[in-house]
Image 1: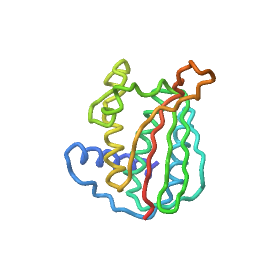
Image 2: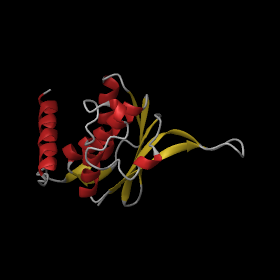
Image 3: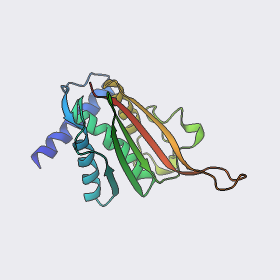
Image 4: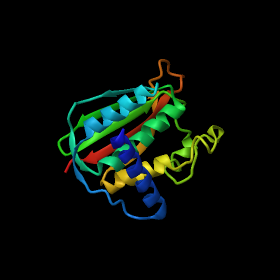
Length: 181
């Protein structure tokens, strides 16, 4: 419990630093990113959410562990907010890790793609300010970019079964590409 409180305090401090424009003071260290992903999935499952992890048990990268976990939790929370299930996948390439966070929600509206990573933007205003401050995705993107990574979003679609059928949205996908060195 003390460790969880320390992590929460570090996340609050990092968020306040972000909002104040300060640099994150947490040092970078070689970290098992797979372990962080498994921890995020387990904590979500323990809270009654349908979140699952698929991927290797070990995948190393140099990150700020608390900040990086915050970015991942924001992405998972976003998926849970809009869908019933979230799947986290991790693949290790030669010089990068590729993480995918998929939900089964309504997807991202086309006009929102250019805005979803902006501060205070909420794609679905019907969720209300109390449930969605519009900071989570912008914080995640800033953290990922501070790690020299890239974060982008797209809609997952089903392949049409008939020629005249339009692709059906299966949910949103956030992809994160993180250099390992």
